[in-house]
Image (tube, rainbow, N blue to C red; front, side):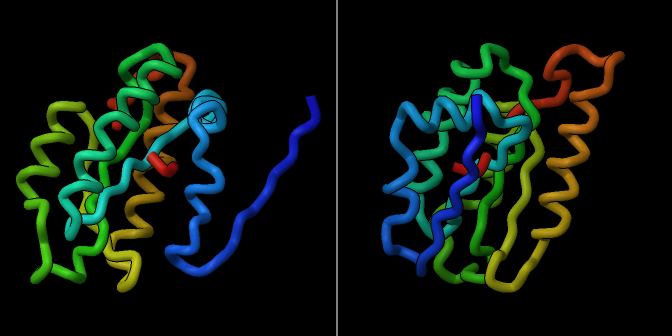
Length: 141
């Protein structure tokens, strides 16, 4: 099957995600994905709730619980507007047995560390002496 890689660009809030996140396409992205970064905005409680069914979908599509995954609370630069506590994020990550980080894409706080960690997890999961999907699980969609 021929592979086509399409890049969707545009300013924030124009609907890029809405164009690409059809349920059938999301399953395909998940099936082909090796590592996942689940991101919520720590200034938006609803975004925190929205990631839970996304993790469930990953587990359903991948057919195992232990997928390389990181839970990420973004926008730590907006501490004064926080709606999701650090403890809430940490507790959910512990429930899912995955790493947890808070980042700021605006200030580039912990962004390099985030990607280094997901690569480390994917490399660990790919080791031949490990179980399939041996890393803890926790997404960019």
